[in-house]
Image 1: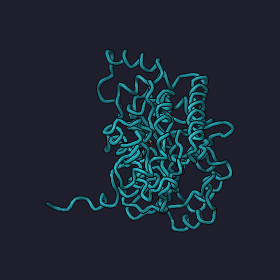
Image 2: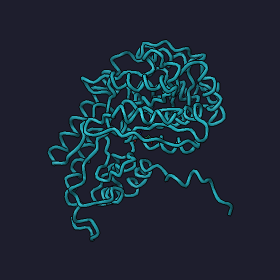
Image 3: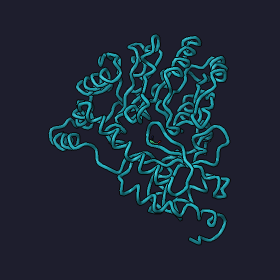
Image 4: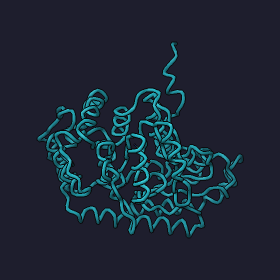
Length: 394
Ligand code: GLN
């Protein structure tokens, strides 16, 4: 057989999504791939059942149904304070996964460089490679995951086409401060670099932290491709609805890329989610209150079990320190954890460029019952020592 694509030899399938398959295989509580096990808001579901009968069921306009784009633009302006023209400044796509790929293909050429902060959501590395570009990793240093501005500038000096900014960040739970965003923006302007944001957790930022949109910094709208999705905000990760916003010049190209990648997001789902986009502020306050409660429940539970962990300021991920359980390989640890303890986690090494093997990521976007069940099971995490290279002895 002829050789297959060389590019694909440099990365594996997504470990996050592989862990979901492993969770299913072992019947483990799945706290790996971040998605809720509770229903989307009723108003969206009610509209979905109407739309099942009324349609639309055929292709929408490639860049998104006009009424969906109009509703998105309204919500966008409400939260960012920046008016966006739904006719020229938005392209709607299949989830933030496509948003990021579209954005990356819009601004890069083969051989270009792309700055990625590490730890990072694993798609960014694969997206960069699939574009024929080369990632430059800049560390976010724990425990607060700050970056060294000199190290960042050294990366900018390599003439990157783009920087990827996951803010609020997955998996670190970091919210970039206004000062940090200003440093990034100044460097992006100085070195004429695009910024591709992933802001899917914009509404899950714990008090007193606040989300700031880098595109709002003067001079940044034209060079920011803001990628986002409706998955986390409305608990509809399976609907695959995402979007990119930027200047008309950039969106014009992004629309071409999207047009040939996927043609369009699902027409009935764009229609059904519109009531969600029109929710009042109280919806977002309740969403945050719900996740604040889940964060407290889960992190207090981990504390009671004596498991060391990060304290996220945003999103719904927490990293556990597994160094005391005797494993050098966090992937092996996660496989065994799913099989023997009954909880699925994501190996931390899949997020880091650096050789980090002592962390695993769990998420708490689950019902309280599921979280209690996971905590009950995690009581056995200390017995992971016994599992290593030996028959299971719990
Ligand atoms: N963002 C989610 C996570 O980090 C997964 C999203 C996906 O698999 N597309 O777990």
